[in-house]
Length: 121
Image 1 (tube, rainbow, N blue to C red):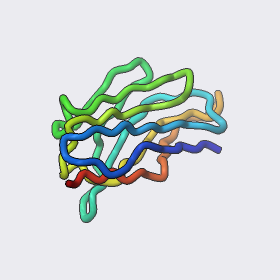
Image 2: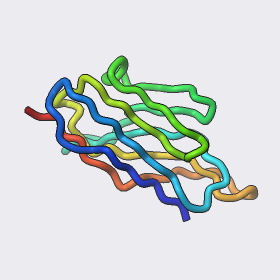
Image 3: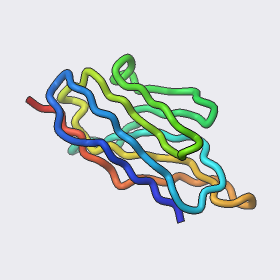
């Protein structure tokens, strides 16, 4: 089994910063792309940022220049540094990873349980 466990959410004032962390554990052969998604109340889940195993990144236009995604392949971890936070960043943030669990299998997507980020004064 594979688990993704997120941490680092919370309440922050506008203009503040938070860092989210997601650690993958369990029966892991290899991890391909990793990313962060978010879902605000009444809205669809959307991609925030993603990173390939070689470090290529992709960001949603709304977070470019404010958020930075990174990963530590040795620790099976992906981070999201969020700066200059705005009230519209308020959402549940989910970690996602494409993971292969054995040599003979293809990869499939796994999700974390989500962590709440609230930006409010």
